[in-house]
Length: 277
Image (cartoon, rainbow, N blue to C red; front, side):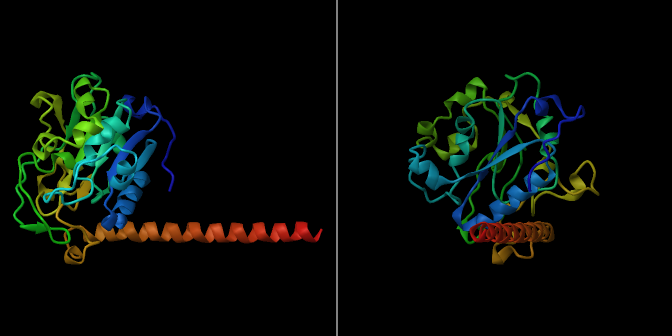
């Protein structure tokens, strides 16, 4: 489904200045369906044009942009590649990284409107979770690790042109420690802007009643320990929302395939008529 690219006077100034917002989604080969659903939810609800890009480690390696060996604490293929976002965006404008295990119920124009007019105020913006996982494993049995600022890096708005983000080169991302990267240790505290937790609502941790409007659904649901695409989490909280998004995506894909079949059939019919003429 194509994003709504219509411009209106009600759009935030930051959104109007963009040709499109680059959204890099962490891609893991064992969670392709999670990526597809996340992408669908982003495009479906956005009132600004989005360029949704899967961050595939294999492609980054082939391009020579990522060389580090996978460590024992890396639960996904994008554990560290996420920090290439400013580089991949050409160190220009604002761009977003998000894990693939999200489903979006809010419009990214609202999130982008939180970015300050002062281009040098924040290098990044994220939800500043106070989160310590209780489980020893997550997803399909990978080890769950706890560390300061956990889940801050799971959804980040990057001010790619900020001078401090120039440090995030392929060489540094391939060599620096997990602590340095995931704790944003290249930044001062005041350079990290805060986003309401409803934009990175951790399933099993955050509560609806803690929102400003407890009757509203979150803007973005994060199945951080595992979502319904894993058998062990098929009945997790908000599983129905993700499954409904998947069903809608499947319906749209089936319709697109049917249209393509009809168009191909008509093309073959026309070609046959030309040959017989």
